Amino acid sequence: MIDLRSDTVTQPSQGMREAMVSAPVGDDVYGEDPTVNRLEEMVAEMTGKERGLFVPTGTMGNQLCLKALTEPGDEVIVGKKSHIFNYETGAPGVLSGVQLHTVDDRGGALNSMEVEMAVREKAYYLPKTSVVAQEQTHNKEGGRIVDLTHLISIARFAKEVGVSAHLDGARIWNAVVEADVSVKKYAELFDTVSLSLSKGLGAPIGSVLVGSTTVVAKAHKFRKIWGGGWRQAGILAAAGIYALENNIERLKEDHKKARSFYERIKSIDGIQVGDAPQTNILIFRLGNLDVKEVARQAAKENVMISAAFKDALRVVFHMDVSLSQAEEAAGVLSAVVTKLKNMQPAS
Ligand SMILES: Cc1ncc(COP(=O)(O)O)c(C=O)c1O
Image (cartoon, rainbow, N blue to C red; front, side, top):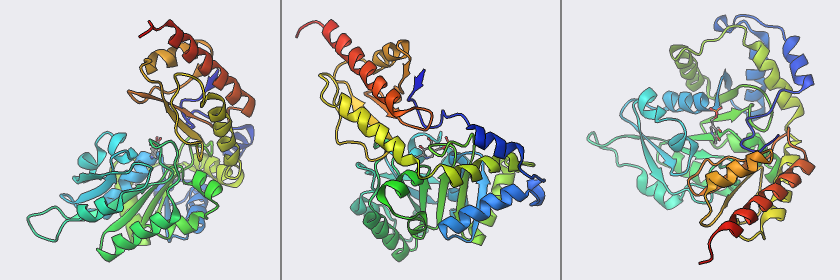
């Protein structure tokens, strides 16, 4: 099976499993797990932040950052296509009692003008704008990299108006290797960043959030309140350390696979695809073909594609798919689309 539904489907490699087995561990609620501590220090150091906190998921990373940066009744500015708005099951309302103010983020970057308009005046009868949150790379925009200059201007504006800035960096590593911008350079612009280990980096679980000592202390407290105080989590942190030490540079290979897939499908009649992918995600439309049917037919040919959107399919390239498998998958998709298109009555 060639599974292109997401980069979260990877299996831990042999080396990663060995690192997990031999990890020294302790009780992390007591702060005594040396491997968790090492991972948190490592990511804090890489990002130039005071402190890191290891959490099970990217969703928890984002939500703890929002919790730490807001008070109930506040407002958070996010992109209409952001993960926080679309795929975190309304968590900001449930967990932090905040409301989301969405702005246009076509192309990945938050629209600066809309962000400016969205910041509320300070008045007791208005919600307080507390955070502006950007995503890098942008999932629903096909893994697009948001330009550093744009991030700088968003961060500068946030500072000017006294609003915190959060970066959902679930796939920040893909931007780091492709745009050749260090993770520190990105992170210095934001008060908090949540970085995933379990996507392209191939760890089975985990994200690390980073920020100032004060902000991360608040997130730490709420991780416990939300039931996330874990014990010998070093077994999992060891996978994260292995991922950071071994799997960052190789993300470029995933981007190459995505581009090769794109080159093979871009001129197939029935497939509408925009620019070449910048990183490991490609989203394409299929005119009036039923996306779910195309995904079903491809699965019969051993290629799994995400029909996550009503009108588009998404493929994601990762370490458990080789370049030749990516090319084979492009051939399968092209054949399925051509077959279904030929079956349609002539208009
Ligand atoms: C951009 C982005 N942020 C956050 C997440 C959440 O990560 P998790 O699935 O670990 O909760 C995802 C997951 O795909 C994502 O794509």
